[in-house]
Length: 474
Ligand code: UTP
Image (tube, rainbow, N blue to C red; front, side, top):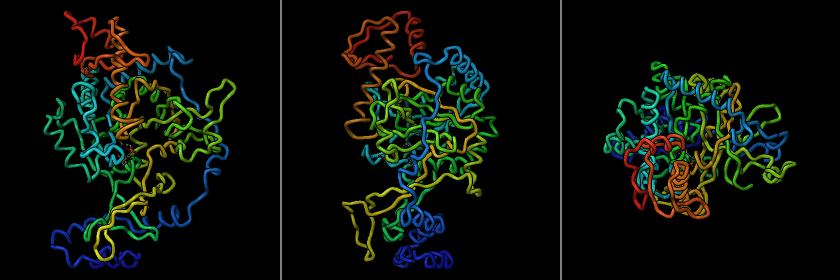
């Protein structure tokens, strides 16, 4: 303890222990635990390089950028035979038990403002099934289809870990074998004030927050998840975020393109809906490496630039769906070699804290700096990265905000539109509005079908198909 405190003093962070003597034994132990997990040199370095002396601005980032190449969908100019070949390769990998699903669910979900882990949010139109339930059912369906249960790794953070695990237990793991579901927590980083001093959220509590979805790579290694995968013969990790109920958790064609391309990290892209859409953009940098440039770092000029046929030139948006090679995760997540480590980014946020007297401060303006890693920063480190196009309506409708864009309402409507498309493909007579939204709310569970083809087949196999009306659940 003595040396820990000294080290905090030496780093100008002695105030972290200012109220130590007033804490009870448990409080003291907890503060020592929190303080012991922070790498003070790293915090100093990040503050110095990202806040005090921030590097080059947007123009330097944009220097020499061109759009990254991606494999187009068959109905948008892609090679249908190649897509079929990829799907077959992906299915073979699934039948061989090489694939794990991986959900990053450690975020704080501040924009949604839901009281609880985001994965427990009731997202479907009729059953009000949670995001976790939707993924569990898709993963179970894939396991049954390919004859091999798909292990599911879920990254939480200490803030929501216990509630997440309790939710799965209370719901019988949604029918999955509990042994198939692996939880682990990601790392935390302290928030600092404008002088680089660590903020305290209570007299004995450091203001910690998760280290970003990019923290998943080191958390996969540190938690032992990568070793578990290795022991089980899993070398492909299907990565998706907790907020997107449309995501194809397990997508054979995506897996296949990754394998056929000898890729270490593959990604899905979709054309931006409008120039300012808040998604990162797949670009090729001046050194010829594929990178994702955050929308906020993309110079306006490039955001709006159009090519000869009028399409946005930089249109391939990143929707945070990836396929990782396990050994690539191991290489990046092990650390020790700064040349293959993900960089941190800074974010200026309102961080509630206690001041020097122990009084609580609820800031009305951003007062603190948080440091986060982004998973897409792994891209330039990957050998043979593959990017494939996907259809927005079949892969992406996230729940980010309480209302407006990317909200529970838009995501619910997108789920309904998907069910309606499937129903129409099966020849069902269903009334929809001009946007394809059905006039009745019904629900197709992933166990019934999770693609058009499977819906059509499952529907035709019904001996006595029901009339689809308000509240129908298939
Ligand atoms: P977002 O960037 O949308 O953040 O995360 P968020 O925490 O869910 O929501 P806001 O910004 O506070 O409103 C995208 C995905 O990355 C995960 C989230 O759980 C979500 O699945 N994530 C984010 C983590 O797992 N860890 C993090 O540190 C940050």
